[in-house]
Length: 310
Image (cartoon, rainbow, N blue to C red; front, top):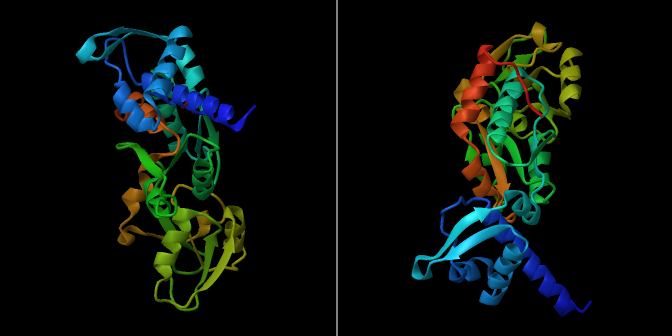
């Protein structure tokens, strides 16, 4: 196949894909975006847009009526076929592993909200948040769930990634605390041995905030490695979420980190998308009911609903 012919098929395929994603955001009776606007948005010719529309019509993905200056009206949509041509089946997302009841309740809310739509979501789990964001940036998934703090800290590094949804009223986790080894006061001062998780965005950021202006000894490790260092007394303090009930944290004195002023950003979940993945952000905004997610999560946390998700 010649390079020109290959580019021809590629351009037409991408246009069909993007057009399908836009159509999934529409309902019967709504007006399609004009061909003129699509030529600007997709940077293709009118002929390419018309060819893509004709392809979707011939494959029975939609029925339309043309109304001259009033635009083209959607008469019917075959959403099952549109999902196929949108290349979003499944719509893959990455979230932290469900290690706490807050996660269980959040994913129950998300699953319930997805069940009200035809979004073909497949949710996987990955830690830390930096790896989820790397996966999103490299195109290995369509969206990720993080805390608002993690998003704010990482988005400068990835200008193509944006916050698609702020899940107001929902919870991602509980605030972090500063834990001290057994027999020590939770305080950071000169000479303190501090544990820092490799690649953990929030934990490393909060730890460095506490260490500002102090001559501390930093010891790096993964999640379990740092807990072991604390248990053995090889570090003096460790920043950790307040809902982790694991040895040696039960025996440790702790203090809250409210004075750092980021508790709300730690607690609030957000959904991130890549601007390079056309239409995904709009689809999620259109189809996911944030208030419903938060209300279902609250029911689970209150004990009036059992956790149930993917």
